[in-house]
Image (cartoon, rainbow, N blue to C red; front, side, top):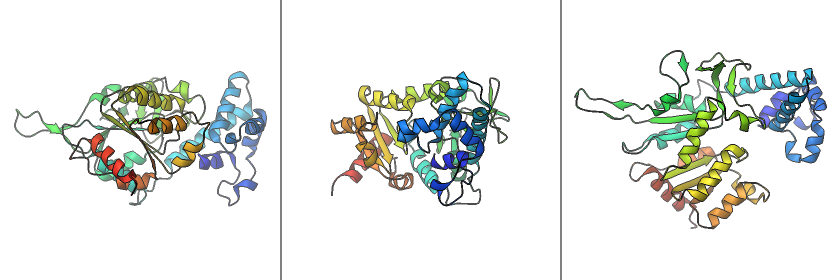
Length: 339
């Protein structure tokens, strides 16, 4: 998010000393129009926060036509789209090592176990690319034919391996997972009511929930409504293990269901992984981190792990012996136990 602020606002985003840089003319005019400096003074967390700035700009645009604000919103969305799809290196084997390790270890499940469900708020194509390099298959809600179009029915499909024996109903194919991009993707294109997956997406037709306070409302229009429905129903399923990695619990529409599920679903195991767990928990005024910590101390099945995505991916054990939730919970307890 810090990089997106630099790219959208600063005149020289690649410069060394960001603190001394000026904003672009478009960004400066927009910030003056919406009086963004007052928002920063009222809440320091808004400083260099692209989500806070875009939220203020979009709220302002709802009540007043302002060319500078409209121009900044359009330019920012175009920049965010370009930045989130332009950093992957097709020639690099190490760039997505953590993603490949994570998918490989969690998608290796017994035939009788349910499929891994992967929910992400990221727009990028990291998991799709990593799955392709790993020889895995994602069921992402899009058709298997070209052009690929979104249809919720495809989430109920699966892939099985059939033998030549006509009486054999087949066994589930290994390495298949269900993939939900809650805030859309850089390769999702909206054309009226039709959502297609394509590399040719402009900011005007991107099916993405851009960083702003309005993403709560946007989450309840299609296709995001279907994705949210799948997310909420998954949290209510019995014997579920939810792993939240690198998530700051800053999106109320995603965090509130997790907190409610911890309190009401006795079969839910929650593992929260972040390199800043201690700092986040010590933020006493945070709406979710402190309650989760208190629930963990009270005996709820919650584990808070201070680790990066790469570190955690390396810790994931072989999940084929016990059920995935049981084995993962046992391993995390063993890792977290005092020596």
